[in-house]
Each structure stands twice: as C-alpha cells, then as structure tokens.
Image 1: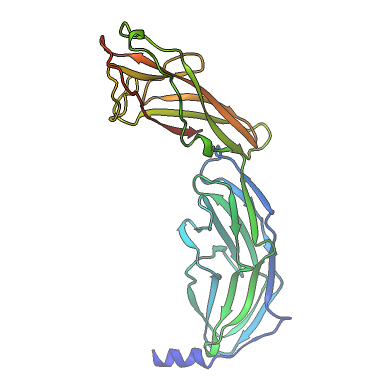
Image 2 (image 1 turned 90 degrees about the vertical axis):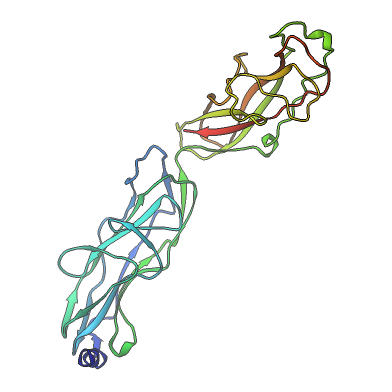
Length: 315
C-alpha cells in the first residue's frame, strides 16, 4: 500500500496539447413537456458533441476522476435527478473505446504511465422520469470534469461546459389552480318559513355558486379535463346527494343539495365532470346550484348552515 501511494504521489502529468479539452452544449432555453408523454421520453437530446483534443503524458501510475461536478442523485440506468421533479439528466461519452455514462459520486480510477491523446465526445439527454410541472432547470457551468491528481493537486484535462445554465420547462398541457376567491364559497340559501316545508323532498329555489380556476400554459390545441368531487364536511362518509347540516345548526329535518348547472343532483363522494380547459391564461368557471331539501316529515325552525369540500382533479 505504501509503495502504491508513493508511485502515485511522485507521478508527473503534463499537457502535451494546447490545454484542457473542451466541449460545449447549448440546451434550448425553453422546453415543453406533455403529461401524455410516458416516463422515459427524451425531452432533449444534444446528440454527439465532440470535444477538442485531450492530450497529456504521465511519468508514473496516476489517479483519474471523471464525472459530474456537483451532486446529482443517481436514479438508475445512468439517469440522475435534476433540481426539477420529473426530469432526469443522462450524460454519456467516451475518451477512447466503449461509451459510458458519467455519474455522481465520481469514481476514481488508476491509470498506468504513458501518453493519452484522444478526442472525447459527449451526449446529454434530459429524460422524463415522472409527472412534470412548469419550472426552471439549473445546471453548473462546467457539468463534467476529467482530472488527474499527481501530487494530490487536481489538474483539469477535459471539461464539458453548459452554455445555457438556466432552462425554462413548460407543460404542454394547461395547468390550473383554484382561484383564491373560490377557496371558500359562501352561499345564501335564504330564509324560509317553517310552513313552506310540507312534505319530504320539498326543495327551495336553487341559488347559484361557482368554482373558479385560474389556468395557464399549454400549447396550441392542448386540452385539460377538469373534474371535482364533493364531500360532506360534517359527515365525510356520506354518499347520498344531501349534505348534512353542521353540528351547530338549530334547524332539524332539512339538508342541503348541490346540483350541476343542468339541475342534476350531485352524489357526494363521486367524481363529477367540470369541463375542459384549453391553452391559457384563462379563468375556468364551474357553475353549480344549491338548495334546501326536506328530509323529515317534521321540520324544526332554526339556523341551517352546512359545509361541503371540493377536491379538484385534472387529467
């Protein structure tokens, strides 16, 4: 072990070319990803990029390190996770012989004395690894580095440089978020005399409400299907079409029914169609109706509040 250490530490490596080998890759400043693209889809491919000559001579056995210059988590098959969920990076290349993928952590290999004079090449791919939302990808300026370490002082022999270090990723499909004004939707179902309710099933005039979504993004012709599920906040297991009154209600014998805009009662706990959104920006509105419905033969007057929750889904 001691002899091996001495051999490495006394090695002398010198460039015999013009200097460190250089290669450059420019990723498009804006990339578009569709939710319909399967995992494994190549979002960007630089194809093969040849570097300038890498030539140096070492007088003794020496150590080399070649790989990423910053921490990237390897998630399999040479793909490393980027800072943006759902997008991985894979860089393959070769100085001589068979290709390989570069990795993190960077492995250290021992090389014998002699002369190296090759033309490296690189190929960078961005790959979909899961659901992708719009955001920005960041890359280090020098993303791959080859070094040798005689005297334990790293000397650079080759570099892969990213010309574009900031890349915007845009979903090809629109994305939506609930408008702040629709986080809580108050509905006044109005006052009604107790004598109005004279039979089970009696309903009041429906009152309008709407869920508003703020939608953006998407390419021309893209579509996003919206749906929603309504739950009874006071009785989450309720799967009827009547929302229970809140626990502090003083009225008895009535409930609240939500209807779609075509007057179809909404069954609680079931997914309901909410329309289709095209390329944004756009405000998408889901019109609904609410009414009281008599649930018992006798109605007790009093306050009759109720609460429901909406779970939005996008496909």
